Amino acid sequence: MAQQPAHDSHEAHGSLKSYVIGFVMSLVLTAIPLIVVLNDILDGTAAKVVLLGSAILQFVVQLVYFMHLKEEGKPRYNLMVLILGLIIVLTIVAGSIWIMTYNKVA
Figure 1 (cartoon, helix red, strand yellow):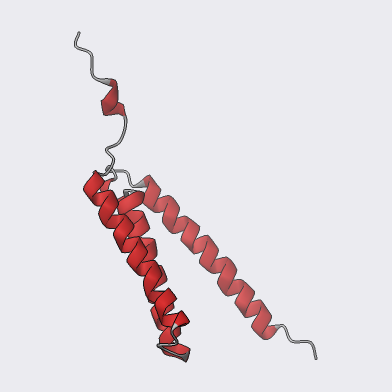
Figure 2 (cartoon, rainbow, N blue to C red):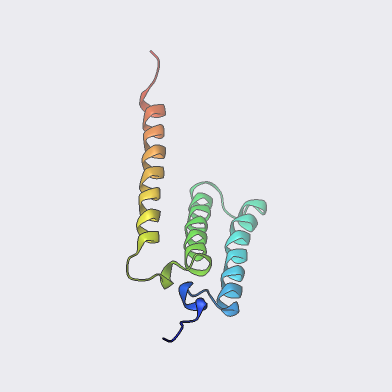
């Protein structure tokens, strides 16, 4: 009976190149809002859009390059758990905002 190497039981991890790319992208996506805010390049809604856009892109970079979400096997349990967690968090945040908005004392 041939033995299978113990290394096959672990999922594949990213290469040094992918980690460096992810790290550099994370640094850039952190520096952009920092530069925009500290130098007063944008104000109001435009600054908020840049901050939110950078945050979303940072989230995607973290998922792809460091959590290896794209390299997942057929049953995408990690993705399903992530989506469930996002739904729960968004429900709590939206519910809290709704309560704070419409629960005014007369």
